[in-house]
Image 1 (spheres, helix red, strand yellow):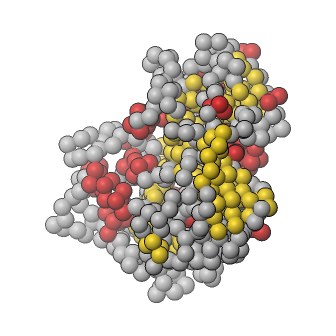
Image 2: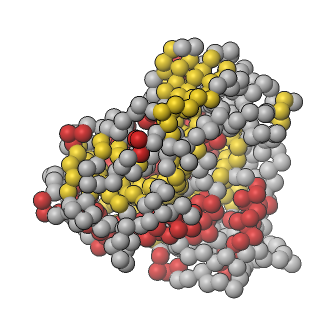
Image 3: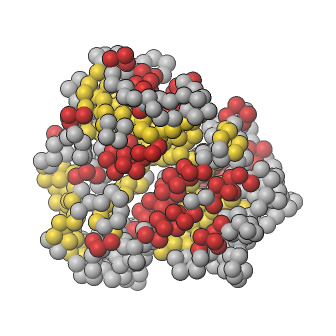
Amino acid sequence: MKWKAMSTATLLCVSAIGLSGCLADAPNVPVEGDPPKERTQGSDESTTSPTVSGQDVNIELYGDIDPDLTQEAGSDNPALLLDDSDVSYAGAGMTATESDSGSAVQSLAASADFQKQIADISGRVKTALENDGASVSELVNRVVQGPTGEVASLVYDVSYESAGTTKSSGELRNLLIGELGSDANVAELPSGTADQAEFRVALALVATPDQALTWVSAFPVANAGDVSSRYGALNNGTAIVPAGTSRNLTKGQNEFEQSASASNAVDILWVIDNSGSMGEEQENLGAGVDQFFTKLNSAGVDYRLAATTTDGSTCESLRSLPADDTKTFITPDTPNAAAQWSQDNPTTGIARPGTSGSPNETGFYCADRVDRSTFDREGAADITVFVSDEEENETSDEDQPSGQSGYTVRDYNTYEQRFVERGDTFFAIVGEHDQIKRTADDSYGDTNATECNGEGGEAEGGSHYREVARVTGGSASSICSKASSWSVMYDEIIETATGLASRFTLDRSVLPSSVEVDVNGQSVARDPSRQNGFDVILLEDGARIAFYGDALPENGDAITVTYDYVPE
């Protein structure tokens, strides 16, 4: 065993065919093999300039953005607009305002205050779209660490198909900036051609030391891939900082030596509702499975996938693979892995547990009590994914898990503490309820008022699963989303798995567009598509570097990472 006694600046190296990387961990934690050799940690004034700097809007934008596509509108609370007709993208940034007073949101350094503002602004966006005739489903809801503090990223499916109308991206953007408090004259703003019914709306909220900033954008679902390549960092808020930040940017540097000893293991447990209402949702979980495994394998992660149910009478055991009932998890080497995951003729894939389970869904109990002894590897990162269309019955209704007579019911607070201490990152594909019943004396609220209906089925509850995902750095999604959009949820899980597998975190909250990487003195290109090059993965605890394809460093290579950051 080796003991790490250096800063936590580290490096993940990934390829489609395997991993050879550097391994280090937190100070005074034993790790296998030799850690990467960090030689210097520089700190100099940055020469990076914003791509777009607001004149009246308190915003700077960074990255590959054409300034000619931007303009400002409004006076008291102006907005910075970006319109790209090539991909029918319409975005806008502004100072976040309170819904009741219209005043600027001041310091959101306290996490609780930030969460309240996320709920306020996201609620206003969703209500405005629904009042406009759209059906809205949440695909992403997570918080990461950005250059100036926490950054919330939310993505919605927005459909006008049932309303029998079409819209343009500009129309949606203009609707939303008015709702969010900009005084821009919407009638004078660019709107584009109203010829689409299916959109994505991305919403980012950026916490800064003084006030909060928001960025909202709309674009057709058909253009989502191109938009992600061009404007992904705007949509998730990591390319947005307050005006004047460029004057404070500082250059940081970490140097490493690639090591042959590395671990990139991630163990992913799925807790899947198998009650009578879950037929459609389980079909959606199986939809797009080929794409899911293609992306998971190309990430080069040493993964294990296992599943259990929410039925307390049977969930303490992992589900067996249909091809070999002596095995309970899928790996990159599992033959015909997609069928082992979602085989539906008969429905024996581990992600298709059927619908004959107990109607008393106790996902927390099952996630806590399932036997992971043959599945969970020492040193592996752990992810748990809840999939359910009902509330977590033990913590919402004080119900005993099925088949567990004499069991003492636990409340939400008890489980939250347990899961946080365990160290898993949780994801939730569930209903859209938002009230938390922390103890038996609290109220869970009216789940009928927040029931969702969509192509993915109907669902109620979900708030306790969503809250656990939030406090552990994961993401929440609506289970009512259409099947074709579940790939967005899968991508969030895969990206997080890739980042967590690294164990290697830069010791600054970096400006992602500023990151440069050299291997043996040769520059490596950043590739946001994650095919051949490096990319920056942002998680709750900061930024991590991943290499892909031919850019994978070899044992002994010298790697230099430079970046800009905002000093605390």
